[in-house]
Length: 300
Image (cartoon, rainbow, N blue to C red; front, top):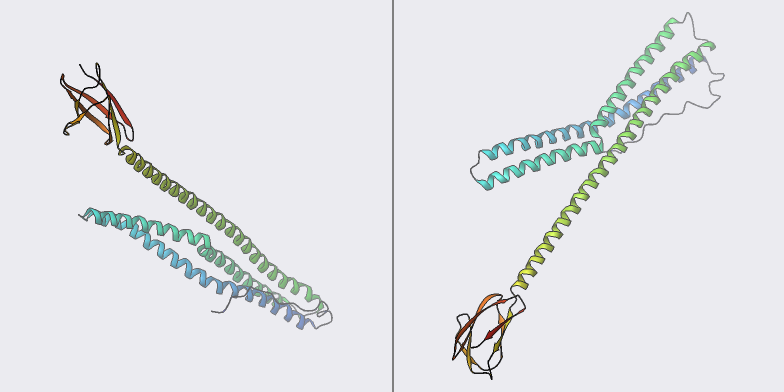
């Protein structure tokens, strides 16, 4: 595809070209220059319309298809007995509606539909002005009682000038509208980027918080599972006598002394049994994670 060039208007001629030229030559130059300027502008717009029309129609068709899918998939999901399939259909419908919105946003950002309408309005106005110029020119020629004279140069020049000025104004107005659409699309794109960035930042922050909470819970769980110890202070009436000490349902072990210690004990409540000739004393020891529970047993 050939690269589309900008619309340009040809030069009318040197400043002194029409000073002493025959009126028929001057009138022909004015007429053909105005017609050529109008034709060049109209050709540029008619050719430019084609790509915008195609893009606009494709975008609207795609948006409609996604809209239909987004509306039908949840309905289809209602007829499905499988919960997993219902969920997938519903999620697919949400995705289809999201695509429909993105397609519409792309149309607004790139200005396909708005450009198509803007070009159509402009070029049809140019066509109307050109037809009016041709009729006004013909009306002037028909109304002349005789051949053209030097006095006809100015009125004919004004007719040509009016057409070219009107064509230029239409093109200028269309360009102003394009600038406004361009700025609007940039603002919309910036808003979308900002919204998505903020959403992504929130998602990342939520993910970080979830990871931190998970790590904190894992650390707390790991700490809660760390074994501790038990220290039993045995108080004798006199010198220490042999006793049997056991923890929970373990086999009793003989011990003589004033302080019995057990390490690598799982956190939680444990029962300490101290048996002496005078009887058995039981104490409950609450072992903290990675800590030491201390209990005191007084022998009778």
